[in-house]
Length: 316
Image 1: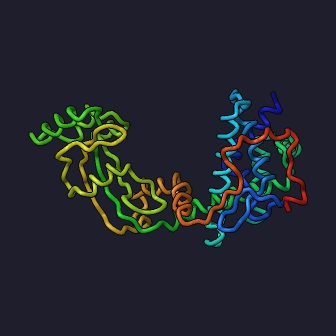
Image 2: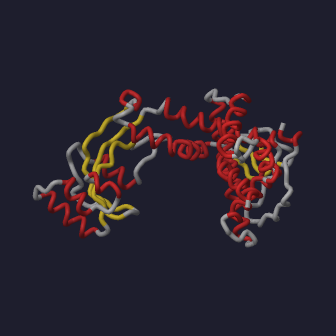
Image 3: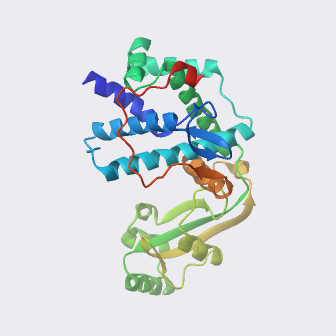
């Protein structure tokens, strides 16, 4: 059981911290990202880790479709991470060896009872050297710094504050709009009828961005309808989205906002950047990146050997 726990402890970092080590890759390229190579050896190692994580949670990894999904998902993740690491470098974001060592020491103290030997054993069991693992954690720390940088230097965006009432059918929405037209209170109707978590707060959604690269936004139908409303105006007709039918009340609109001028007021927008900014940034970068995949992603990968390991001289 202890070995599985060790793998799981490392597994927390698999989704973000073990994808690659920048351009320090061995020969045998499976993809390039703006000219930077991703190696077959790295892909195999990370694919192997992904399968181990699947198996820990009882997923049968013998099926071809599972192998294919795991390998292709891992390759996509490695491409995404490479894009973000390139952006971090453009912004002058770097991580020192001292920061990595401090991070590892803290992790050993909190997760491995103060035993660096136990962490090293877990890393070895996962098919890596400590040098490679340190490089992977350096990338993860760089991404954390990039995430913080997005919040500390947010883009200028348009914001909107709104309430809504979400119901299942158009007829329900039409009926509620009629009651609003008759003078009933929006917040009270939201508390009574709205289906989502904002109902308890009278449908209050707080501030959210209506544009921007790194910001999290409402679904397109909702945003378009809200932007079209004036302050104090509510939807005269139901707004349909994948979630149901909305009635929207706009309470404030601000254009070209510096979010840090009133960070408390716009905290929900800044929180959205922190939570989703990296994914949103990566999606934007991918639109203009030169990405070349050099393997047939429809071919089922071979099962990697359990002792797949990146050698010390390949990780340096």
